[in-house]
Amino acid sequence: MTQPWTDPQIVDEILAECETWAVVGLSTNAERAAFRVAQTLQKHGKRIVPVHPRAETVHGEQGYAKLSDIPFPVDCVDVFVRSELAGAVADEAVAIGAKAVWFQLGILDEEAYNRTTATGTVMVMDRCAAVELSRRDGKNGRSS
Image (cartoon, rainbow, N blue to C red):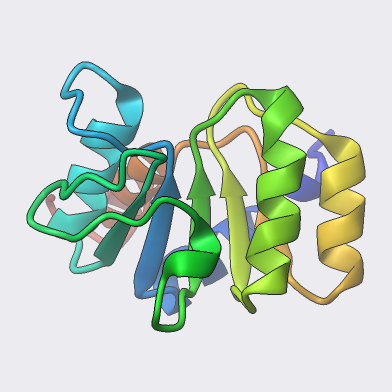
């Protein structure tokens, strides 16, 4: 049975409609999944915004220490922090008016999902945006 937070229609909607992605946990560490996923998002024409306490510039984009520091609208907040910290990030995403929240593979917080979607914000959990973009490309006959 598919969980509501892995709904393929919502996944596709977020990937199609969200252009600016705040990537929480993104640093200059090329060994981390966030680094590679952000790179893939950029290759697919998305603007990435690094969000990390060190506020580092990553992939040519200025970083910010926290979501509320970003001075422009964000479409999707892509979360690369431990599950126990992710719920607070989802709450911040709603507070800044993000259209969507995306918890990466292995990140689950059902209470955060319920809070977030109750506000009308769409949310995906336990999925990799890079994998899903590649899947869409294959489905659409494009190569990445």
